[in-house]
Image (cartoon, rainbow, N blue to C red; front, side):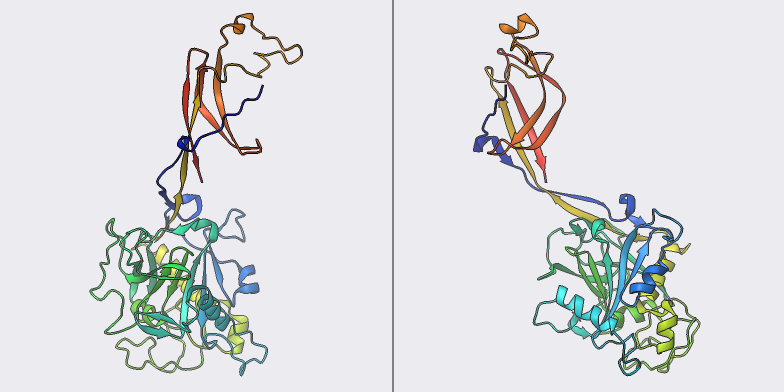
Length: 392
């Protein structure tokens, strides 16, 4: 015997949404504090465009998982062989800059702007999609970078005011990346008085788009602040003008081999180096900067980040009145062959125990099932009120 009871509007109550945060990394951990790994297969196939960072060595551990990806983009294709150097060049850095410009910026914006200063190139940290769920928890992440100036940490300026906008774009909320640490619950900036710039009147460190799980870093600010130099493992060609910067990015305007390893290079490599040295990619160098920071014995906070998702709940109040739901189709109660009750006493005083509630649509199709923590007795002498919460 199937009985359906239509819920009235008064039986359905929409609850206030709640925000749930969890650690962003594998196993819901909130901090990456061990060595990170790249995968040679990925570098060989798509390393010109991005590098994946794993929590374990994917060449020896089948359980290794991608945590985030790093890219480098240049509006004119810098940081990769040009068409002059190689007429078959695909200009991957130009493609990366264009991709994220189209994804994050409004149509009228042709360049990324950091504190009012345009930049021709960017670093991108793109969190693995399943990690950040609905969004990166703004104000609850901390990025460490290691360079010649030591370890520097960066957060955003949201001050953990969830939903408060520094700016808005077609990509959702936008916050500025600032120099600082999550030293307090508010995520205050602690490392400098002019947190968004290096030197005086310099560009900002970057932008974070929590709704897309993307951090954009400005090489013109990050480089001098952290102390990025050319990689010691390569002999590089080309030049980089220091201009009026008070802290030169390189030891001289002519790029040669220096003694500081694992730091981003933001100019065109020779064709030979690009083809044979996968570690020469700008984004691979940034990977090493993060990896060196999380592995440093003098620094134990790791790369900290949390995901956030909004849980919407609806409460359904199910009322079982005294004359309803007093019989059961359970074979211990009702004999389907002859229609008789198993226990003769149930004819005048049936007693059942409610264990499950099903929610159906207008076509009597089962949409959701709620299980009670323990059976609830029901008879002609008793009424039952159940509250079913559906989260989505």
